[in-house]
Image 1 (cartoon, rainbow, N blue to C red):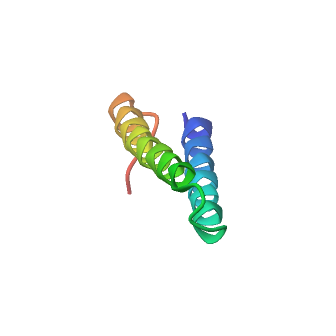
Image 2: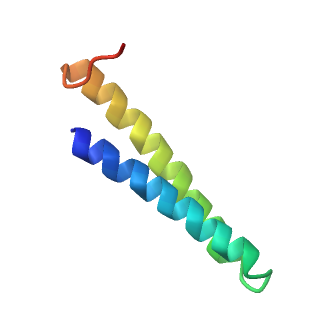
Length: 63
């Protein structure tokens, strides 16, 4: 479970970096940036769901 959470966080950072690169490279293709940010939001929702499922199943303990 913890590995899945870490992979999701890494995916969020990669997607955010991709969106930043798309924004800096110019306004030639804004659809790439929108797609990257959409993926980031979806991964963030998935991360929240993984955290709640892990807490519910007892795999993760909040402090």
